[in-house]
Structures are given as C-alpha cells and as structure tokens.
Length: 130
Image (tube, rainbow, N blue to C red; front, side, top):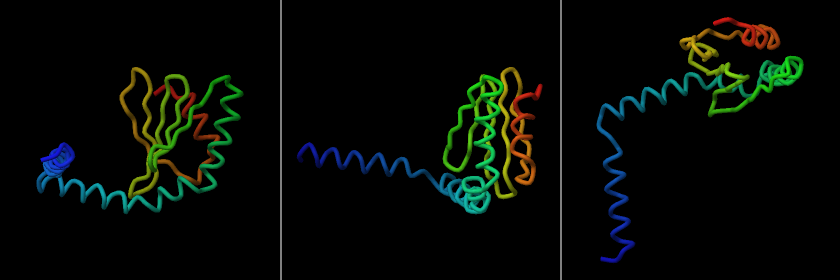
C-alpha cells in the first residue's frame, strides 16, 4: 500500500468518526432549521437601510467620541466593538437580537427594532452602564 493510499484511508476513517451519532445529527438538523427560519432577518440585517445607517453613524459617533468602533461580519451576525464594549447583532427566527458583552458584566440580550434610529441604538450602547 502506498503512502497516498494509506493517507486516504486514514482521512476516511477520521471523517467517519467525526460524523457523530444520531444525537449530533439531530442537533445539526435543529441548527439548520433555526438558520432557515432566521434567514429573512439575516437578509434584512445584511442589506437593509438600517444597517447602512448604523455603519455610517458608527463612523460619525466614533469620530465624535474619539473612539474607533470596529465592525465585523461573522456569518450572518454583525459585531461592533468599541474599547472594551462589545455588541453582536444576531438574526433569530423572531427578529434581530443584540447581545451585549461589557467588561465586568454578564452577557445581556435585548431585541432590536429596525424601526428605531441607528444613531439612538449606538449612543445607548456606548453610554449604557450595563
């Protein structure tokens, strides 16, 4: 048996072990169903006018407060970070959820209305005491 044949057999064996059992398969199916249900909200978050305004306001408010607001897309979620403050906007089947992670505080979750002002959302996040 050549080296490549041996390597291929080892990789196949590892893949079969990683497949998991029925419990893993059920969890993957549940995760997939939740992602499908959240897809309309993910699309609104990615392409909607509220998000465009949020990105514009992040630059303006960051400049005003002399704070760089880092912005990153993580899959369907939008993550914002300013100094030690972090917020992740995550689409869920019931809407958009903000997950706040501030230093010394426990994680906090709140629903986000895309009807509210993006500027108001950012200012509240940056000035909140937890």
